Length: 146
Image (cartoon, rainbow, N blue to C red; front, side, top):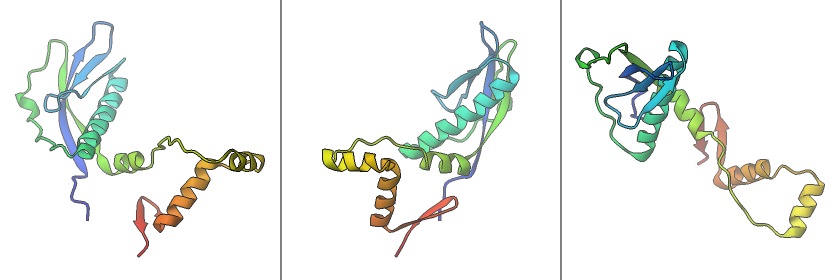
């Protein structure tokens, strides 16, 4: 069973940008920075940045710190502090299913025949790998056959 947390809530500092909109930082997550052109965009970007940053930390095996209570964070002049929530299961699913580009080498004659038949190389490679590894696709889950 997966013991990773499903939900994280971190305080975000929204600071007015010189060019308009907001610059957003997360005090507990150095390097997690984004910006948005208006409040709606800034909230969307903050959530997206938080999710991707946390996923990256999980993927790297880095410990995720405890969030600082928002009331202890000083808001900048004209800015504010708010909580941003990251629901991780859909983020993990999306990242697990993202396409990865691979370079491979096959004989020219095989390439020519496959192109004549309009074969989708990526699709065929996926089928072959799944068969070789005994993998069955299931919604939101991939398991290996016994």
